[in-house]
Length: 80
Image 1 (cartoon, rainbow, N blue to C red):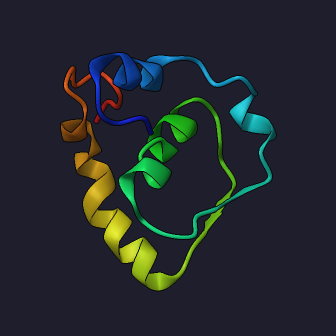
Image 2 (tube, rainbow, N blue to C red):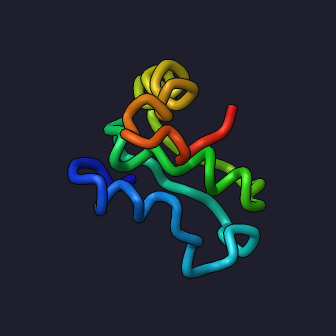
């Protein structure tokens, strides 16, 4: 997830340069929003496999991801 200036955040709206359905798994090493914030978009666009992470990372993501839209100035990155 891109954060900061508006032109950077607009990159979050761009299409992935790959087909999310072809990904075997996601390995999430930590819950920082710049690493985890596009997982909902990945799912929305067809990813249906496992996300591997430590329990603490999962716990934090369960709080952050539903609210990750608030990290965008334009609010268009994710839909609930």
